[in-house]
Length: 236
Image 1: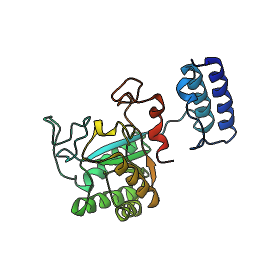
Image 2: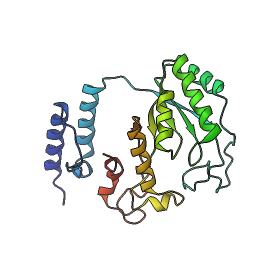
Image 3: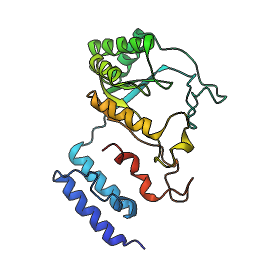
């Protein structure tokens, strides 16, 4: 049985440590985040947000740079060619069109802008178009640029960074144990290695998961509560 008062006290102490500059890592016990009262966790998170972020939000929008016909079988995605959906299908957009959309978003107050493409990765001629689009955006806007193009090589990541991309988006989706229930055409480890290559190339990484994708006790393969925090720790 959980001791809710003790867990609440632990959250309060942890919040104070973080406000004083402490950063949690692999050696820390994240379990208290799962057992403490939700109100205590939210209050702690809000105190941290107020100190480090204030009341400003970092707005990010995306443009669907290439749509549909994806070879992968991710079960949540309408752009997979393996499922009968009405998702639009088109090759990589003209860089000028991506630039124009970026300028519209910047005028609306957006801070970050990401080109997102369907498919396992982006290579060859379409990669060159993506690089041209990032160069245009870097030259003609003040947007901070993000990229989401699937599995890439270290050299491709370096080229994306040189073209102007600062951050790469690659979700782990679920815990390693449950991942085969989400996708079978690539693995959890493929994702982790992709993130490491992006980091090696000097890119920041944005990575998350799907709430409810085998992440709660009793779901799917009876994943433990601890697995709800594993994706965020896998690449620390």
